[in-house]
Length: 113
Length: 114
Image (cartoon, rainbow over all chains, first blue to last red; front, side):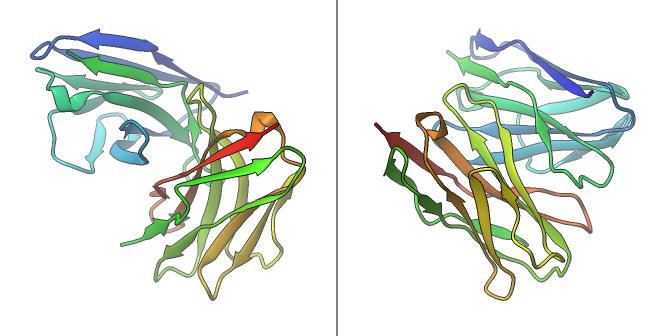
């Protein structure tokens, strides 16, 4: 069966520090991969999605970037965090046609101080 | 652009009763999927139910069912025999078949009271 792992679960980082959140998927090949951000009490904002290695699409310009160095690995990064980067970050995967929706990881709560 | 609207920011229901969460969407697409996701306090997003737009029959999963009205672009979720564990944020989502880009509503916070 397919599983998705996301870490760390919680992170507190100072303003101006770098960020790296990692997401991996097991039990499937060529998944679509997604990074979402959820501000407190708010809906989900799509940040990046990827349909293959090295293929990244960005939904909104921001302080973040994403990379997909391997088929089932998706990384969210920042060189210098801002206070506004605080939030809950969710990774998700789907099959090529996304027929069954997205399967989400357990999320990372990021607090920038 | 597709938009998803959940007009009820918060709702509450007594345990064992039935509640309906509303969702409307705007699209020019003819083929798409609709979803309801549940996000409990743990914040793990869990798929509750899925509807294919080309199927007229409403989807059902145990105590969860939908009322899909394609012409009205409405997709409500009915929870029967509400349980305390149903307390969560519920997100409606739309995904066209043309680009697999899922769009979420702002969510409805449901509280089930004992």
